[in-house]
Amino acid sequence: MTGKPISVVVVDDHSIFRSGLKADLDASVSVVAEAGDVDSAVAAVVENRPDVVLLDVHLPGGSGGGGAEVIRRSSGQAPRTRFLALSVSDSAEDVVGVIRAGARGYITKGSSGAEVSRAVATVAGGDAVFSPRLAGFVLDAFGAAAGEQASTDEELDRLSAREREVMRLIARGYSYKEVAAELYISIKTVETHVSAVLRKLQLSSRHELTAWALERRLL
Image (cartoon, rainbow, N blue to C red; front, side, top):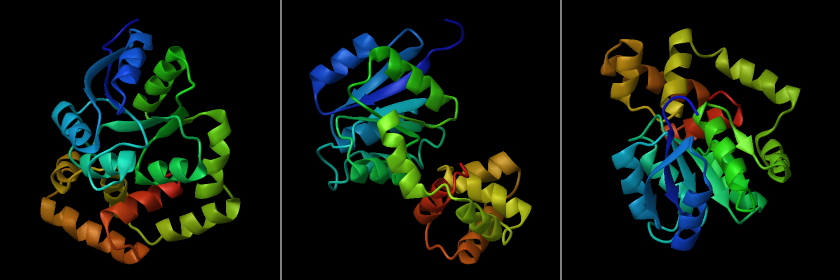
């Protein structure tokens, strides 16, 4: 192995599963923290800002939102962290729910340690990964038809080049301050662009913007 290990937070409410998973991951992955419920998971992600969070879909605590709630609550404070769902569930509802929240992949707990390690590396590198049997759910939910792409192009044409840049960063979870630093513009200018983007796309919040961009594979 070369380079720095990929930092990972493991989130699952069964400690024996977390221990087994840690033992099975290869040397390219470094587990920096663990958590067993929503609130402790959010705290661990915000504190450690790992490269990837391995996240169970069903978790106790919080307001009952499980893994999706962890993503929504922590992604804004850890904008470069990517989330990979790892669950025993392969139901369409669970898959689509956590992907809409912002997860970059979804694999089942039947995966081997080597498979999970490869999935972590894939997600850390900016790509998405899904267990083969789950890919159909994602394609059905988020649409891969050419007609949808044409519609997306028409919607993007409403935005200026700068608005598109701001839109992508905000949708990825960057704060206004981080967007300003990334694009060398003022926070006030970022706020103005975000307002324009939401108005032109007929969206009401940054959460809706993230879902919109993810559905159209713009992240």
